[in-house]
Image 1 (cartoon, rainbow, N blue to C red):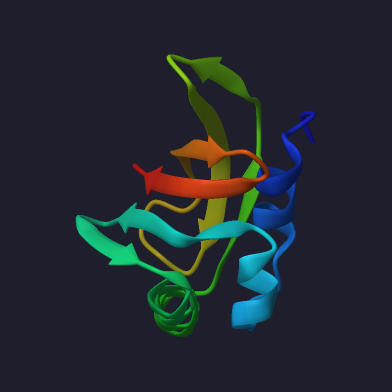
Image 2: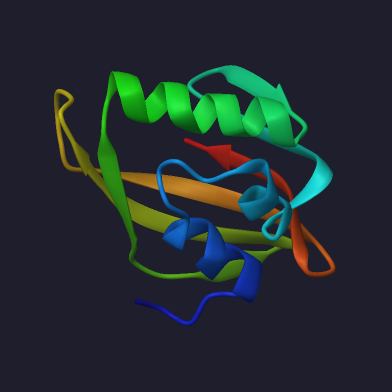
Length: 107
């Protein structure tokens, strides 16, 4: 695995059933996530998104590399699961706020 900033490494190692307390170690309280054209804001919504996504389509994500561009940390990850076209490489674009993830966009 590439050397990732700590909150991003923690994000990729979160358990499927991560609690709000687990997420609070990784995400800022007002963090935003955008995935599959939908947006989620705050720890409760992010937790619900993770649980719903894993219930519908269980998957694993393996970071392949990391680069920083214009303040955004871009991590292409190989996503493998029970969905058409698996595995796919999806870019995870992180905005960090000190030691937490302030925003994540998956595309």
